[in-house]
Length: 300
Image (cartoon, rainbow, N blue to C red; front, side):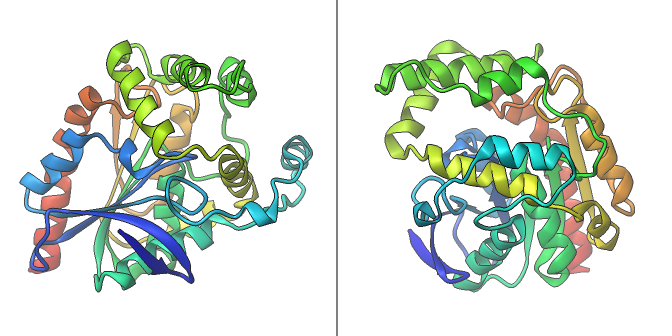
């Protein structure tokens, strides 16, 4: 369904039903759609007693685009970032955090446990820091504090991320995405080719928004000062990161946990930067007890 959130149209999926259930809000990462959350991950949360909300971030999936804003010059903005100059973006991660709050408002949800992956973790961090009464607990997954001086993506990953598919047809686009996922998935959780192809084809046929991805990337680069906000987060927090992540290196997760008071940190050996159905089971073994304990604290 599509709701009006923070003044724009946002596509939402509501699973688990029942207003009496505690809510888990899932926020996906850069250029990704709500269907990128594995079905077994969502179902396990429902089976654990939660109502699960997912949404397409602005400029992704079926949510409102910002094509009228253009994409600007990504290389120039990247150079400004490297020189520690202000990066200009069509919108910021705080706007995207406000979108997520708007989703809760539209559905009459006062408070949610928030799980964010990659860029979604950055958005979730901003939610917890700037709207503390709306966030019951925070899970920051394969994400970063955004602090200057942290390591960036491995060179081969960055090069492939910036490269365009060799052609504009579906097969070429799926092949390009498969190459990238194989590169970032991590040695312990290599993707199954057939399942990966089906997953990427489904996403491509649902929506293809390359210009939106560029604007989201610029918003991440423009997000300065978030690392200082993290000290304000007071809700229970779980930070999970793979020790083989070549896109958002392990040190980024460690730094995030260090900056959030009382945060728990879990390292996943051999995990990279792909949320596959197989990896979902590993993550849930940590997340579900954390969410249940946090909910018990809220209900006490």
